[in-house]
Length: 249
Image 1 (tube, rainbow, N blue to C red):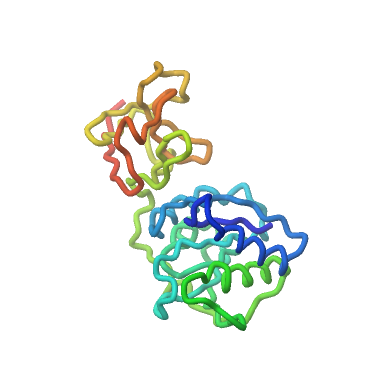
Image 2: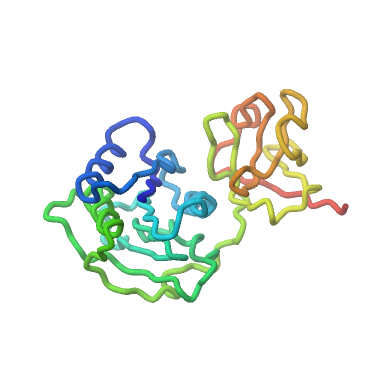
């Protein structure tokens, strides 16, 4: 299958145009909308989000990932990355850094620079004109023209394993961080815009209107208000920092 991960938004023609290319060039391959509202213009925030959401996809899946504020810049390489038997297509701007640093089999990571060019390519929509056709070819078991790269030269190991920032606000106003819950003890507290939040297992364990943090369904530390919007009530935006207060048990 092909999974779409973009910051294009849910309205407008862009996701639909990419899907049109995929349906033409990879007929019969299922296309899954994973995220169409990843943090806009933020490859690093998106990288931590992407890494938390790939595990349910089977080996051989192709992720078409476009968070690409540098589109059209010749210094920004278009790449294919293979990690743990899954394929990733998109810009080389840090978007694939976290999936690589968390790889189960780091020795098997492969990177390629895409050298294939379509007959016509726009300056500003490589998602449709370049990355979608490449993703379609990979889904059809065809590796397009490309140049192999040294993964050690492509991966930035200076990034933190856990990113203490908010990386996504969902439709309910819940705010996901780039921190995996396994990295925190449940008696740790989060400090968010002056608010101190304790852990709860789930929403029903706190009163209506109360704020808390919990481990979301994909293993990330998430901040929520029971039956309220954490983003509005706590003034949270993607990119805002989270502070951790570690208490002794």
